[in-house]
Length: 62
Image (tube, rainbow, N blue to C red; front, side):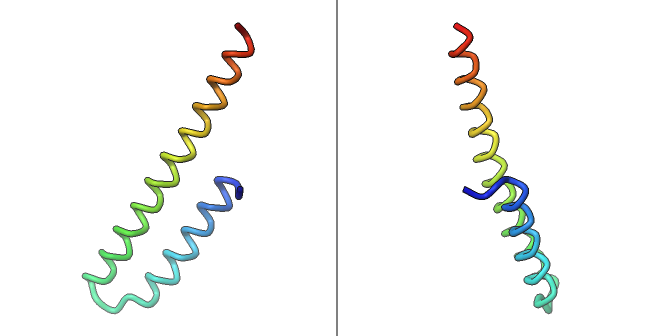
């Protein structure tokens, strides 16, 4: 699995490329909306993964 930072870089490259291709304000808004959803999805996944690590570490201390 790729690191969080690598995945963020991939999302930003995709966003930058799509933003350059956008010709209208509506297209720019659509690109931003998709970019934001990608970020939210990735962050949710990342935080869930960290929470699993925390629970595992706590379980080892018991």
